[in-house]
Image (cartoon, rainbow, N blue to C red; front, side, top):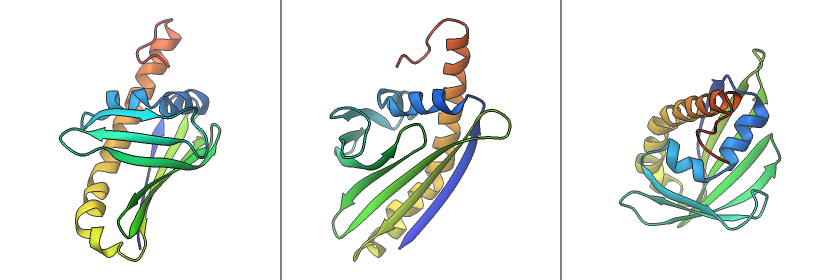
Length: 152
């Protein structure tokens, strides 16, 4: 089993950060390596989604546990293992949001993915989360000024 966890602080309040993040259309706006993301219905436990990375095959995933405005767990099945992304959104002491992402790879063949997928995630998650925090903050400023930078 492999696990990696990273947290970032965001100046926007938790509700706003959650709304921005659960609008999966914003994911491709924040991450230039993502072509598109779709969800088969509301953002809730059991929902199925697809992510299309640039130059790669479609990735299928599902929401295993979504707690409104607090947390969500995504599971991506891979042959012989599962890649899990657990997100938490917590109020920070400064009035913003602390976002934490914990990635876990487990299963009989998890070791087969450690040198490739896991190492790539350890490198990309901190940068991606920082970009997400910045995008949420920009959208929050835009909404406070009466305009939407990334519409929900």
